[in-house]
Length: 138
Image 1 (cartoon, rainbow, N blue to C red):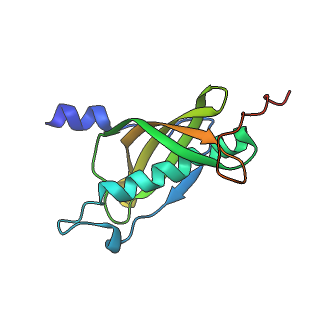
Image 2: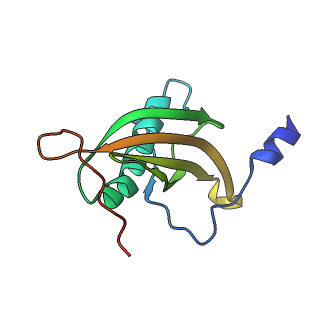
């Protein structure tokens, strides 16, 4: 068990800024104090949509959760940092990888990677119909 704990401790990605930072509250937790997986999933979806919207230069809709792995629990009071980057652009779709880290225990700060996911968004028009993703700006 101690070996597993050591392997999960990490640092925030250097040279990158999180697209979202949030602190979960008691209302986001189950009866034993772990944050609901659904709460984490919603934060991941929000974080993933930010670079997707920037790349699409407009509205996007989530069309698939390609993968989602919960590696460690998240607790009330953790500072949760979500990093997201576009990894694939199709004609109408944008695939984004999201990595989630929790910083906890301010007295002896610990940082753990808690979740990683890949989601696909589709660029949509004002009628919420798929539209082509514009070419990347130079």
